[in-house]
Image (cartoon, rainbow over all chains, first blue to last red; front, side):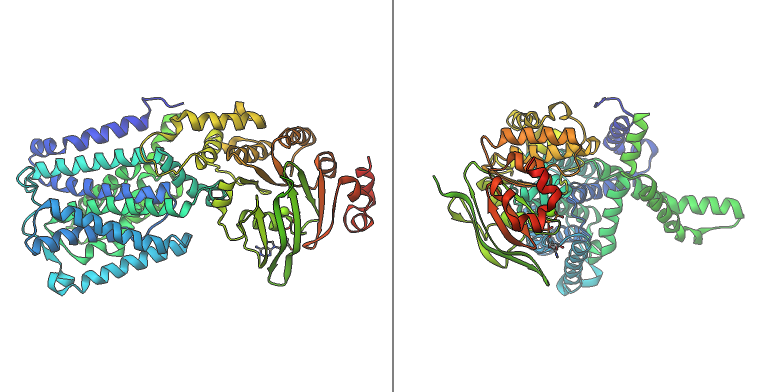
Length: 331
Length: 255
Ligand SMILES: Nc1ncnc2c1ncn2[C@@H]1O[C@H](COP(=O)(O)OP(=O)(O)OP(=O)(O)O)[C@@H](O)[C@H]1O
Ligand SMILES: [Mg+2]
C-alpha cells in the first residue's frame, strides 16, 4: 500500500533538501535576500503546520490563528523593550501567554461548531488585535522596533542570518516531527475521530471536548513559537501581525498545501509566499514585454491573479498541492 | 441479583408540542433481551437517546446497575458499560474498518492523553478490535476504508464498535434496518450468541426477529407504553394487535 518512491514523497524530500540548502543557494547566487525570504517562509510554515493540526486533523477551523503570532511577537518585543532580552525568559513567557490565551478562548469557542466557531475565533483574535493597537507604551498602531534579538547567553547568535535561518529550519522540522507523532498517537486518533464524528466519539466513551481543547492549546503554543521567531526576524512587532488577513493567509497556506497531511501546509506556505514575492515581478515583466511600456503599476494587481489560482486549487484539487501530488503517484 | 440492570422511571420528553416519551417506565433485567416495538415515530430512538444521555428528559429517571445516571454525560455512561448502535449508521467514514473498532477499544483502555506512540502499532488495541470484528464476521474486511463497505457491513460494524467498548448492556436501534433476508438471519444468529453474555435492549421492526429473540417485549405507541410482557402475552394482547401489530402481523407472530 505505502510505496516509498511516489511522486509525492520525492517532491517532499526535494523540498526539504532545498530548504536545508537555502543559505548555500543564497551564496551561490549572491542573493542574500533568498535567505531572508525563506526564513520568513520557514517561520510561517510553522504557523501553518500548527493551524493544520486543529483545522485539518481536528476539524476546528480557526479564523484567529494569527493572534498567536502577535502574542508571541509582543512577548518578545515588550520584554526586549523592558530590557529583558534573554530568550530563556522571553520564550517561555511567550509560549505560556499563548497557552493561556488558547485555553481561555478555546474553552469558550469549542462549545460552538462550524461557522460559529470560525466567527468566535475571529472575534477573539480581533480583540487581541485591538489590545495591540491600544498599547501606547509599546508603539500602539505603529508597532514596536526590537533593537536586540533574543539572547541565548552567547550560545546561539540569532543576529547571524545563516544561523538564524538554520535555527528556524530546525524549529520547523521539530514542529513537523512533533505534530506527525501526535496525529498518529492515541491522542491524534481521538482528535481525528472527533473531526469525523464527534457524536459517535462521545457515544463510545470519549469526553471529546477536553481532547479538542488540549489540541487547541498545543496548536496555539506552536504558533506562538512561530510568532517569537517572526518578531526576531523582522526586528519589529505591530498589531498588523495579528490582523485577520494574516489569519486568512495561514488558512490559505493550509488549504493550498493540503490539509490531509502534516507536511501539506509547508508546501502551501512555500507556494503562497514565493508566488506573492514573484508574481508582481512576473506581471511587471510580462506586461512590459507585451505593451512595450513600463508596467510598474500592473504589479499592484498580482492579487487578482493569485485569487483565481487559489480558487482553482480549492475547486479542482481537493487536498491541495499534496493531494494533487498523491494523485500523480497513483497513475 | 434479581434487581433490574436498567430501570427507567417516568421518563418524559417533549419536543415542542410532540410528546416523544410519555412517562415511560421499563425495567430490563440482567441477562434478558428486551425488545421495544412500536410504529414509526413512536419515540423508540428518543428513548435510547435518553438512556445514553444524548437527549435530556424533561422528567423521570434512569438507573443503571442501581445508580442514578440521569444526569451523567454520554461518555460516562459508556464507561459504566452502556453501549449503543445507531439506527442511522454512525461511523468514522474516513478511517479503516479496524481503526473504527480500535478507537472504540481505546476509549476503554485508560485516558488518551498519550501523544507519542503510534496508536496503530499497539497490539492491545489491534487485538481487541480484531476480536470484535471476528464476532460480527468482518475480520476479512479489517483493512478496508469504511466507505468501501456495503450497507449490511456497516450495520455489522456498528455492533462491532459497541462490542469493543466492553459493554454490560447493548442498546441496539434497529440493527437490521435496510438489510436483506440473508444478512438479517445472520444478524439474528449473532444476537442469539450475544444475548448469552450481555443484557440487550433491542429496537426492531422485523417482528419475526423480535419474537425469535426477545425474552420480554414492550410496545410503545405515541411515546406511551401500551403493553409489556413475554412474547406470548404480547401476541395475545388485544390492544397491541389493534394499535400496532394488525391482523397480518399478528398472524406472522403466531407463525
Ligand atoms: N430532535 C427532535 N426535535 C423535534 N422532534 C423530534 C426530535 N426527535 C424526534 N422527534 C419527534 O419525536 C417523535 C419520536 O421520534 P423517534 O425518532 O424517537 O421515533 P422512532 O420510534 O424511533 O421512529 P422510527 O421507527 O421511525 O425510527 C417523532 O414524532 C419525531 O418527529
Ligand atoms: Mg428510530
